[in-house]
Length: 55
Image (cartoon, rainbow, N blue to C red; front, side, top):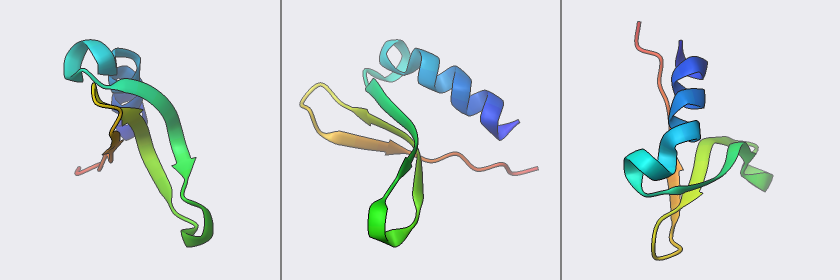
């Protein structure tokens, strides 16, 4: 369910939120973490979107 929601939002991120989608499951490097969805706002500022499955 989380993955389906993530895919839907990434496909429509610009129309819904005004954020240009850049990457999914972006690796954070030395921290070994992942950002669910990464984008840029209208000012070129990075935007991080994290999804949580709360069943």
